[in-house]
Amino acid sequence: MLEIERRLEAERLAALENLEKVQDQAQLDQWKQNHLGKTSVTMSAFGQVVTVPNEERPAFGKAVNAAKVVLETALAGKLALIKQKELEARMSQGTIDVTLPGRGLRRGRIHPLNLTAQEIYRVVGQMGFQIYQSPEVETDDFNFTFLNIPPHHPARDMWDTFYTDKDNIVLRTHTSPGQIHAMREYCPQPIRVILPGACFRYEQQDQSHEIEFMQVELLAVDKGITFADLKGTLQDFARRMFGEQTQIRLRPSYFPFTEPSAELDVECFVCGGKGCGVCHGGGWLEWGGCGMVHPRVLEYGGYDPEIFTGFAAGMGVDRATLLRYQVDDIRYFRNNDIRFLEQF
Ligand code: DAH
Image 1 (spheres, rainbow, N blue to C red):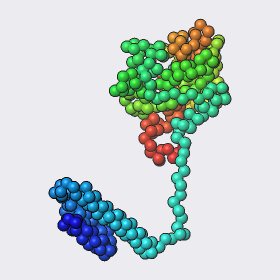
Image 2: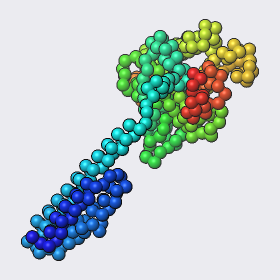
Image 3: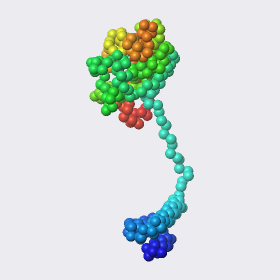
Image 4: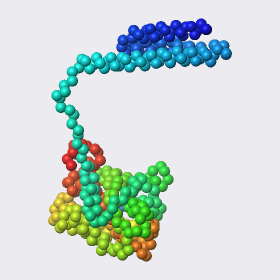
């Protein structure tokens, strides 16, 4: 046996004997430094492997390693023992008052934007529309080109778009791209869907503008759908949402993906059309855009515009929620202040 192996063996016995005397964590740390630290007999033996004659080297290396494992295992066992002792000490000293009331569970609530969205789903569900989820991250083809807004067309400036480092990948600026997804999935069947979800625009934030907001989009495609169906559906929708007497108004407008297009106004449900602060005295609230699906958009969706027609509308859920609950700043919705959210 080599001299160094004898020293290792002696060290192992000494270390294990010392460990018996260790009482607490501090002593254990000291023990670890003495017997498993860099300068300890065992650990420095690793450095001596190279000095051992070739034929004995493998056996020696094994022996050093085994010595280290023995000490490490003993250390782990002792550590568990000390922890257990500490826990028992704490349990026997402290007293537990079992009569104290426990911590109650905090009750969660549905977010106000989702409350409005759920109300919208309920209403349009009754009217035969199905919810269709589509992605929040889109290619610019879906966000623009397939909606009849070709690359480099100035109509793209209607939306302040978040472009990304990846070619052609954008955060959707509206829910309208979902129209294409729905059409491509259902073609050539008739469609009646509602497309809800988050949209993103690179805008200056203020009381009524957020970089993230929620929209719902209605889409109906079938044979023989007319502008009268659009108007009737929106009128019915507004009455079911805001009350039997509610009036809507369509104002001619322009969107690349509908022809003709209109702005949708709802009679102010705060003042009933008389004029108040909320509607700035006009009696009408701007709620969204709508129109007859452009033939080219139908084509991009796979439908033959000679056979099929359709209508679409897009509305802001945040705006509707502001009005519904008379909230004066849109930024409250997403800054996660429990004092605000608890009120719903
Ligand atoms: N996507 C439009 C926007 O966010 C809103 C819109 C207008 C949607 C007309 C429609 C539509 O479906 O027909 O600005």
